[in-house]
Amino acid sequence: MPQLNAAISHGTSFASSWKQFYERAILELDSSQLPRRIADARHAIFERAEEILTKPSGGENHELHDALRALRLLEEVAVRERSAA
Image: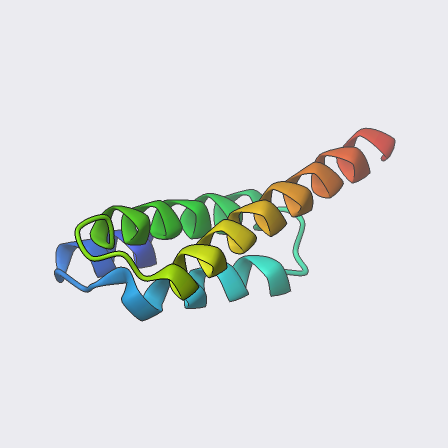
């Protein structure tokens, strides 16, 4: 989580950074890195969701929901693959 912690410590808004963390998780090919990528993406998405509670953005709310759902599915697949190995 070093990159995520760096974003937080620099006061970076998660307005655009959550998508970068999400894309890194979705595109991660190294199964040993995948759980960390998923956790980082999920954390960034939740942080962004908290940011927009005061000023709702309908389109982005849907994007956040879809991203969380995709991460959950990716995590389930990764767990199944580890169990099968």
